[in-house]
Image (tube, rainbow, N blue to C red; front, side):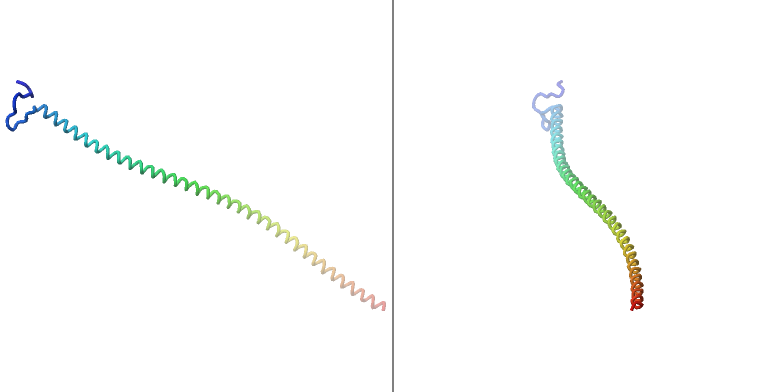
Length: 141
């Protein structure tokens, strides 16, 4: 007898297909279902990948902006530091000028004190000379 091949019409309740054909058709149906499921998963994965790429691009843009901000702040701080350094140098120069002026003032004060002493001595000597002159005038009169 034939294996898997029937001759003639099928009995009531029996399939007209051989068990081998039915098994092949079931296998093909399962393969088609698996293919559909895999295509759906592939589409989901593609959508997820697109979303991830969009997020990555957004993150890269944010990172670029942050890098630009950091560069700007760094430049600003550098300029402020330069300004502070110049200001400190100006202060140092002015302090040296002030010390020099204080020394000049101290020297002038000493000179004035010396001149005041000399003036007092001259005034005292003049007074003594005037007194002697008065005495001499009185003697001559």
